[in-house]
Picture 1 (cartoon, rainbow, N blue to C red):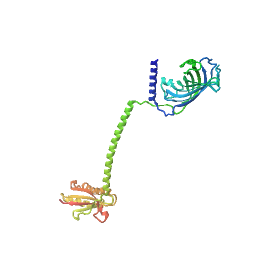
Picture 2: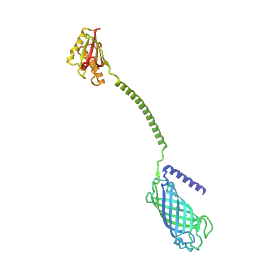
Picture 3: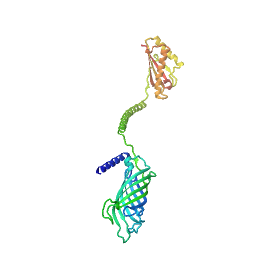
Picture 4: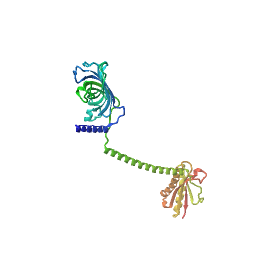
Length: 376
């Protein structure tokens, strides 16, 4: 018997452990319930089983601790309709029981919790409490006794919150009574009860959770660590780009604040200098300026060792950066004409843009390429 009890205890502990892993812990008021029941009760000794049967009603309040195990408090009252030979009670009841109990859902214990409400379950219930017999005045004092109760509940779950049940049970008088003085479990001091009840459960019930897989957790942790490393690398790149952007911004601001480079002095040796003027915003040598280019070409042909330095300028009208580029293009235009049209070797020609010019008071005259000839 001892081995059987130990095995049952181990099975219960294993079941509780499995439930703890599979079910999310509910709040305190979840899975509390209240139920009412009504039926019949009859003594199991010295009386006709059906002849002594009378009505019974009860109330129970409890809480389901896990999907398998629950606890509660209950009461059951026998209605005073007895046909016993013993004097009847003068109250509405002739017997009562109030006690604490524990319950076990046998389906969840042996079949496991399926994360839902089964349409039908069977629960075993056992408890202990206070029993009382009510007697007529003059027949002796009322009688109190220690009692135990055991039974089954056949549960029909109408919904997630409402259950209708059939409840056979037996209540034992453990203290002896007015007829017998012996104590303990004795069928001669027992009453059989059969009731039907309705129970309402509060809260959201038990919520199943998915047991974690350690391999999946390790993989996710590795992925998270990889993402953190990528983030750190991205932050480092972003910081480097911020430094570069700040450097470029400082250089840009420095360029914006830089005063335009202006050529204030040019040679007045008109024998060695020729001017090629341009229209506004243009680097094309127009027909009226071609004689000036031709003069340069003739001089260089007549003096085979001569060279020419061409410096292009732009007026200060318009965008500064555009004018700098335009000045360079004007110098290149004269150079390209000397090479392509007059076949002057490129090695004898130097051309460069000098930016904004202010050699002439007439602003439009500063749109010019100044060509300085060197006979040597």
